[in-house]
Amino acid sequence: MNKKVMLVALFVLVLFSMLAMAVAGRSRFPLVNRAVAAVVLPVESMLTGLGNASDGVRGYWKALTVMQSENAKLKQENIELRNANIQMASMYAENRQLRGLLEYKEQHKSQKVVAAKVIARSFGDLRDCIYIAAGKDRGLAPDMAVVNGGLVGVVDEVYDDYARVLLLTSPRCRVGARVLRADSRAVGVAGGVSGKDKLLLEHIYREASLREGDIIVTSGYSGSHPADILIGKVTATHMDSVGLLQEADIVPAADIADVEQVLVIVGFTPEAKIVLQGGQAK
Image 1 (spheres, rainbow, N blue to C red):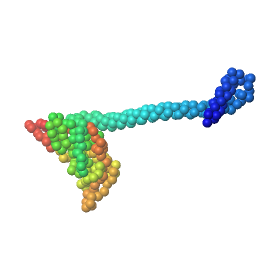
Image 2: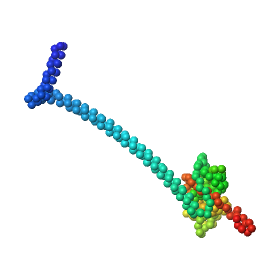
Image 3: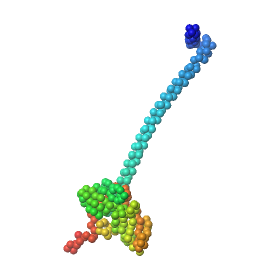
Image 4: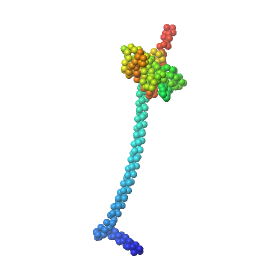
């Protein structure tokens, strides 16, 4: 056993001697240089490979960290862009509705109106009411017309500082209506249809002139609303179930489903309520 240890030690000593001689004078011992190279180069190659692999792993993790950081930034930018788009869409819808209010006020300067914001909607099967931030404090009363680009509905219940509006698309809502055409003065009643967002014009004489594309406005005959408030456009005509009177399907002019701002006509005095006192109209 001691002999084997001595042989190994001698081999190691010779190997280091050869390495020392190779370093001290490579040109003087070419055979020794080749022998040393045969032993050393594979070891150096392996160590170099391990070093390169280590550098590759470090580079991979560094690149992965950079990619994760960039992905996080892109996700945040996408969230911000989505939020900006939502805000822009909301502002566009609000501006469109405000333009509708301004246009109505410009076209009906003689009417006294109160602007109000929609603060709530009814839920359940009917979904036929909205609540607005104006009530007795602003002079509102039942049956007043509510508009935005067209007739939205009528005031149903009034409280101190808010009111409930019955939407025109409700089956419970009925308003006097007529055709706005020079060669037709057909009159009827417009109101909602259960389960649908369209309107139905009913009780029109069989002989009356009514056709697709006709514009329908309020008649003013009920005494509750001014005449000529835009209701909508006729999309189809047909006879009633009995076959005696005409009916028409109407698309509402107002964006009733998404209305957010409205005007309430508060200064209307029906002609039926005008009385003569001392020969003077009041």
